[in-house]
Image 1 (cartoon, rainbow, N blue to C red):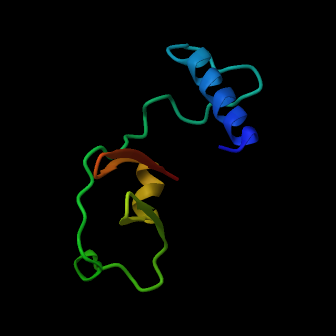
Image 2 (image 1 turned 60 degrees about the vertical axis):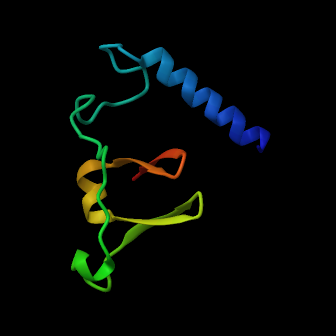
Image 3 (image 1 turned 180 degrees about the horizontal axis):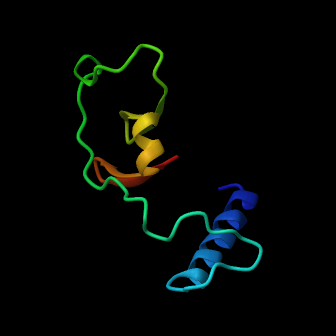
Length: 96
């Protein structure tokens, strides 16, 4: 892993650990919506493109994890922001 990326992950993890359970927003940050007010999707269901009835010009967040392709509608992610998913034995989060 790139050392800069690793350091960034450590810093974000440390910030989250410091703020976890805290009622106050850390200095220098502005809280727009209360913590926990945007529900994640924890058990996504997938359909074919034809069944989704999405316009051809619709935007999606596409990922390939463990050799499996996934597409998440950005219209849906605008309302939920996080999809907790699994491909094979790999758990991951799609975040918008």
